[in-house]
Image (cartoon, rainbow, N blue to C red; front, side, top):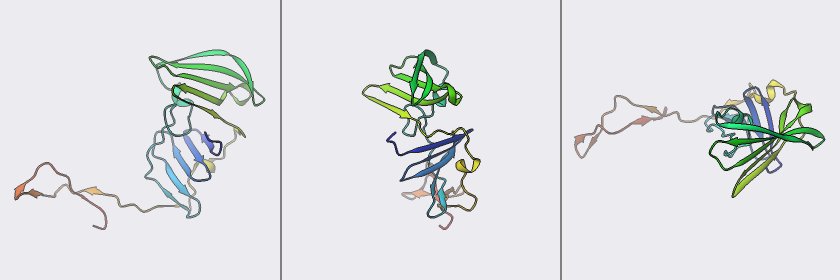
Length: 178
């Protein structure tokens, strides 16, 4: 992470923000890009990939849910005044190295994740941590409105000819205003 992002998670819901964007969503579902100035949100964003190989902030829970991962405790280390258990996560058949640091005093929250997958790698560090996350932080405010999008629908009864002959290999879609 570049240092400017903020992340909040509560249950399966999350909020990710920086000075440029704000996303609110639920794991495994499309995220909403939120505009606080316009009090609006775009619910057409794709599902955010929070895995170690994704482009979104890494959620260590994603690796814990994989079936082919083994975890090995490597000892303890002090990080940012937290006594942490250093854990190596190894995926079967993958060359990458993943190290997770679970803070004992924060209910074993992973406060540092290091993923080394040459030639790439990253370190994600959490700071200013609170275990008390209010519900409204991970919800779209009730007075925010969705941005209007044309929702295209398939016209099942359409008939199409090509070169004067009926075509069977086609699809016709219509926007609400068209």
